[in-house]
Image (cartoon, rainbow, N blue to C red; front, top):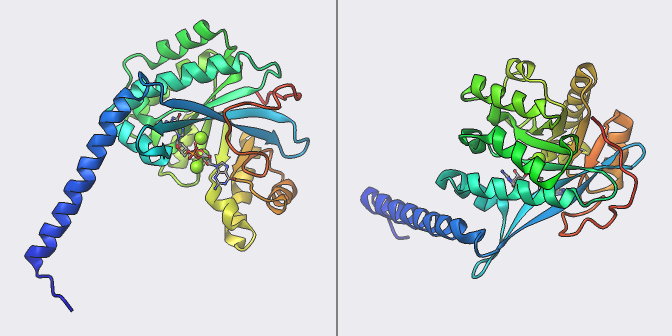
Length: 275
Ligand code: C2E
Ligand code: MG
Ligand code: MG
Ligand code: MG
């Protein structure tokens, strides 16, 4: 049994940290060039009404095809993009691409675009959103921005001011991954959001865990009393969909209805706007 003394353990740890930091820097460098090199794509995942199964929207999800690494998951590169600041440029590219694409859909469905908390540090996020809407001709009521609870903590007053101006155009705001963040009910109370998205983790456990079911039920009750629709993320099975139906969930999104894809296939199906 080899014994590692304290000093060696520290060196080993530091070497590993260096390696991780180097890799992050390399990834960040490539990320800055990803747009120019045409390596980014936007995929779309359908969102449906739980009762009628009518299409209510599509979530835009970023994809990166790296020339050497292959497909890199957004869960891995979005944090790097946020850390190095590339998320400002990338986020703008995603928004422009998704709005331009949605403007061509004949069913009039909404497009939901994820907004990083870092994008709220953009010197003119409001102007950027407005000019993209004008440029692409997409009706503001067909754009939804998904923010996480962490977007409204931090400089709360500034965040609320920016988001209210964007809402002023007619754009709607959904709270993504609800239940996993650190916002207080007080923060939520200060902000007139338009949709709650229940984090996938709750539905994943719902069938085995009465506790997860109780949390889903509580979020649905919150949505009902605030008169805000609730969407459940990560529906993979018909049993999960049935559970959501029996609990009165409004909308759902997940592999059961379809994986994110480059093409919106059923764009001619009737859509229902929730706002
Ligand atoms: P998110 O916004 O919560 O997006 C939902 C994630 O769940 C997506 O992962 C989607 O592919 C995945 N998903 C959907 N249905 C199912 C299901 O039934 N089962 C399972 N296991 N997964 C499902 P994805 O595309 O890998 O994105 C991960 C996260 O990266 C997103 O979570 C979002 O936080 C972030 N992200 C993706 N695109 C963007 C973007 O354009 N901008 C920003 N700021 N963040 C993005
Ligand atoms: Mg999202
Ligand atoms: Mg989510
Ligand atoms: Mg999530």
